[in-house]
Amino acid sequence: MRRLAAPLSFLAATRLVLNTGHRLVYPFLPAISRGLGVSLGQAGVLVSARNLAGAATPAIVAASRGNTRTLVGFALTFFALGAAITAATGAFWGALAGFVLMGLGKPAFDVGALTYLADRTPYSRRARVLSILELTWAGGLLIGAPAAGWLIDRSGWEAPFWVISALTGLGLVLTFRLLEGSRVEQDPDSSAPRLGGSARALLVVFLLFTTAAELVFVVLGSWLELEFGLSIIELGVFAALVGFAELTGESLTLIFADRIGKRNAVMIGIVLAISGFLAIGMFGESLTGGVLAAALTFLGFEITVVSALPFATEMQPGHRSRYLGLIQVAMASARALGAVAGNPIFDAFGIAANAGLAAALNLVALAILYRLIQEHAG
Image (cartoon, rainbow, N blue to C red):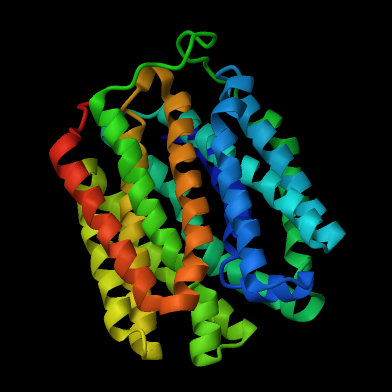
């Protein structure tokens, strides 16, 4: 662990910046749409395009030829340019180009960072190490979202993107100073590895639980603003409260996932997420009930994804970054689908419909995980 302290700290700090850029969009999507002069539905297209761009992750992984330091460098270049273009143009088509570039950079960075650490950590301790990296997901809300809300309130919706672009550019410079040259995976020039049954099934599980989450998460800002009249600053506070729920999930995963088994931890997370989605449908008419239900949903989702990622790192250990790239394709496709479908479902039927469909998708994911996927010893 001691030799990983410096790269882990750097990767975590850099991922906090990227996660802030990724996550600020959700609570502040109405403000961004107003700033661009487009409808909320059109703003949802930006989110969908950004998420769908993650489907190109395997191509970026291939371009790096298995060198995770190079992969991290590619990712940060895309993200820094995307944030700057989004802020500089202040128009829908410019924002679309910027969101696509950020959508290329975020999952590629995640694959590079996860692979870099997984290559250097035994499977028996991997959830603990990767959970430290995943703490930055909650940090994007606890630290990044309130700061973004403050900047938007005083300087306009573009301000956070300028700051994020500058910090990401600094991370790019530091990448080649702080990360050691990475080992190359087996047969970097060979075709994609043949996936086993558990590996294929796990891709479907990622697709299902990520689609479910996006169906609800993409409309949370709109729901809170329209149903309860929350202001920009209040939305930032809500985002921070959700971040505490996620931080709890990440901390629980860090402490227990290696002990109880990563597969078991994923199943527990899915059950909690289902409970949260059902609670949103039942108590969503009350601000207090809705916020508590949303917090339970985020807690369950975070346990699910933070346990599932180290679980996935051992599915194809000889082609780790390639398989994690496929995981990112599944998650990007799911987020794009959820972002496109979430607002129309919400507009037509309300938050309960989004939450009910999300619960059903998670139930299918749980059944697949229980019946078809086994945990590797590592």
